[in-house]
View 1 (spheres, rainbow, N blue to C red):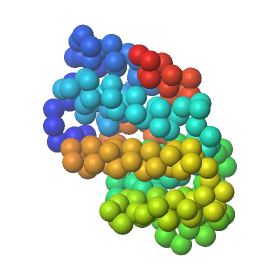
View 2: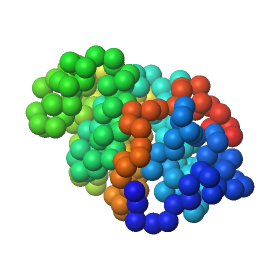
View 3: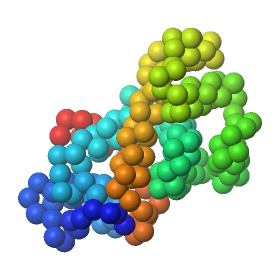
View 4: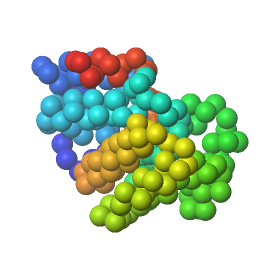
Length: 199
């Protein structure tokens, strides 16, 4: 499940137990990407606050399913199977359309990106560049997003999803986290994001 020690729910005490109680899934599950933080509960709190506010905050303008698509693409580029598996399942759940979900995933995996309209393609092109060549990103990359119809707030949302997945992918890959025992596709209710932001 990981290359470092993790404290499970039953052994958790104090601050860690309190956090676990807040993030447990509907049947008590805690994803391995979260429990890997258990030796430093403060980083678990930071991870959850970032995750919920970047992907699941009600103030986001881009749809959550699309933010999940960007996350899957970044994770594919980073070869992070853990995040691909989790967030592809999340995207599928949010779309509630298996045919469309399969087409999106196939397009992302092929790199052709032929399942997307010009606006979506522009976001994925920016996500690819920021993931693989971050030092090469220039103001003109944002101009292309604006030309595709995004406003600056939406550009920020895309940027933050790409940045979050860089963090999540490196957390998983650097600590040997696997999906063993995880329930794929669960995500927090949108209303929970504000609680974590102010918690």
